Image 1 (tube, helix red, strand yellow):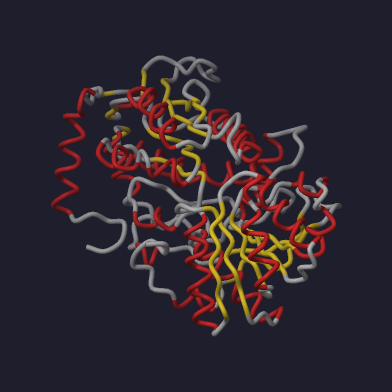
Image 2 (cartoon, one colour; image 1 turned 60 degrees about the vertical axis):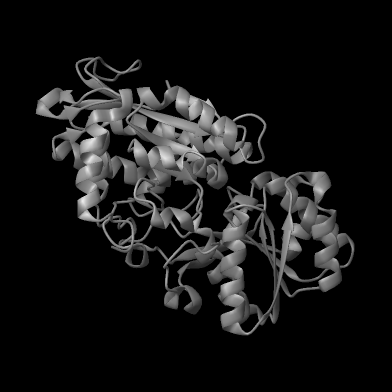
Length: 428
């Protein structure tokens, strides 16, 4: 069977295996006759709104101190704490409240550390409300599948569309890059494109989408891999300056993006950059590269930024009073909706075991993102091809905007993504 849905013969075996559980808690009856196992207690959450309710514990593994995405990861994590507090304030789920504060771990954006801290909290949580990074999450993917533990990625690799236990939201890097190339071809008249990107399935996925769109559009394509770190960008800068592409699709961390854009511009490069969403941080407009960024850069994004008017955006801002706007908050909030929907479905099915949550995921044909994503997003019951979300947005730098960017192109699907057959992860 294609797509996310496993063959029925395996699904039954998986449910049976999970009940035996490799040392995890055996299923038992919880609140309201709901079956529970690991990560769900009759005792209230540590900071419960209603002490009479039990607790669903969710884990967070993020880049909180020294990795390249900490400026996004800290707001993502804080936003998800606020998201689940709102859920608890509105009555919780199935007689339970949700705790996302007890089991929070720092991965330092290192796959080995990510796996280590996952193993530390695995026995205590029902699911992961955040697993940040593509290569880091890949490090625990076999265990997530075997357990089974549903998880929410803080990343957009196209691999997630082929993984049942991963609840992705928004356009993946591959689709985002396809749409960026299509836009630049039609609106900016580009004839040549270069993908400058980190190695691994973050950067490689965006580069694959760039290449697919370039070939479909008849553009010249160049592929340049770079290593994270400000002092490691010389080769990428040399390639941009010497090859002079009309467009660079940039897939790095924010600091490295500023180094590449700023130094390429200083050496006379006049082409355009479109950065995939994790390249942006509003602090870049206060960096030495700010003039170059304003002149040459656009940001592609899987959804709309902090200041947007929607029910979800408004609720997010109300739940995070006084913070400095950052679209890490927006991402964290959006990503939480599918897990909320899966937990609600599992509770209504009277099965809040790990296997029960995965079974609930298989029944989700849409998720209510409260307007933060268009209707039709979050179809986890469909095949990878039919469930793929193909719309993305484009922004330009703007000092006056809350997160430093202003919308240029609302949700759109380019012709490349529209026709794309999603049979495997793009980078494979």
